[in-house]
Length: 192
Image 1 (cartoon, rainbow, N blue to C red):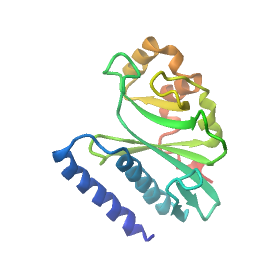
Image 2 (cartoon, rainbow, N blue to C red; image 1 turned 90 degrees about the vertical axis):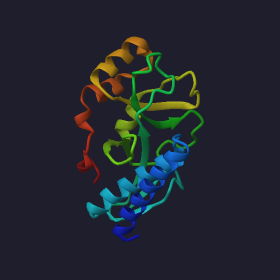
Image 3 (cartoon, rainbow, N blue to C red; image 1 turned 30 degrees about the vertical axis):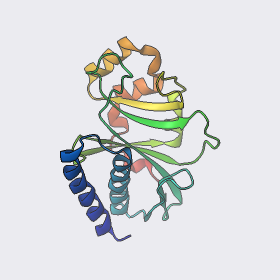
């Protein structure tokens, strides 16, 4: 896919979202995932890594032809979903592993894409496979199928409130991520 196609795809999704918001502001989950993948594809292509969009077939979303690596992209909007009793505690949430997942080494890198409500501003958090699986297991009442996840909180105050409200829900590695998000933000140099 030529690089201009990713830009066109992103523009088309943004336009669709603006139109769709006027009808029903509830955003289709598939749309969130697709635009996150396109943003990641655009970035990886600029890096010259020859990304191929796989769309989750085979357990990963992007194959980097130049270096033979697999990328899983997880995309999130700011949310709470009733996970924390204080609705002002918002986070980007990325699933790392399901409980019933048969194969664990499905990707080499996890890219957590955080979007604003308009999908226009994005942040990329890059995790190696080892880092992603360092988060430890968790049990979220409403989301029993999720075994490993990353919650990155909107602010340090939101993180502190979440720790106070549900300390067992935030694993020790997630605490490290939230205390030093810059260790993962735009760390594209990890991909080699």
